[in-house]
Image (tube, rainbow, N blue to C red):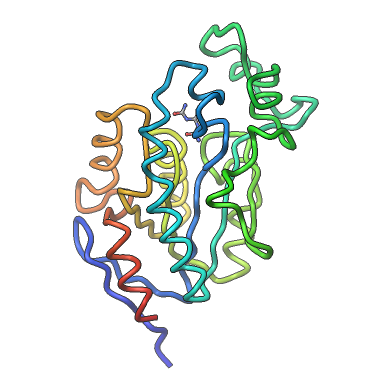
Length: 226
Ligand code: TIU
C-alpha cells in the first residue's frame, strides 16, 4: 500500500508530508536561551524575540503528539568536564563569562544544569528522544542520523532557536544527508529580526535549496487529517 501523503502549503511549493516518515525536531528550546535572566539575556540579547515561538511550538507539539507522530528534541551543551568543548568555542566572543562558567541558571551550557534544560512549556514526553549536541548542527557528533535511519525517517519538520544559527545549521546538515526539511516560520526565532527574515529566505530560495518554509497552522491542519 502507498504510504499516506499530506500536502502542506509551503514556499517555494507544497510540501508532501509523509506522516510515517516525518519527525518533528525541536532545536534547543533551552532555558538559557529563552528565559529572562538566562545566558542569552546576559549576553545582551532580547529574549522576547525567541519567546514568541513558545506558544506556536506548544500547539504544534500537541498536535504532533495527538497524531501519534515522532517528536524529538535537541539541547546544545557540553560534558561537565568540558572535554567536548572546542577551545575556540570556549574563548569566542571574549566575554568575561563563557561556556562552563557559573551563570544565572547554573554552569552555562553544561549538561545537567538548570539553564541547559528544555523550557517547561515544551518539555519532552517519555519516549521522545533528546539529542545532546556539542555543536550548532544537530548531526555533528551525535547519534541523530542513526536514530532517524532506524525509524525510517526521511523528512523533518524543524523548529526552535535560533533561526540563523542552530536551525539553519541543522537544516543544512540534514539536507546533505538526504532529508527533506520543512520549517514553520512562526516556530523558529532569532534575537535579530533581520536574521530571522534572511535565515528563512536562505532555506527556501533557489527552488528550496535547503528546504521548505510554511506556517505552523498549515502543518497542524495537514496532520489533523493524518
Ligand atoms: N541554539 C543556538 O542557536 N545556539 C546559539 O548559540 N545561538 C545563537 O544565536 N547564539
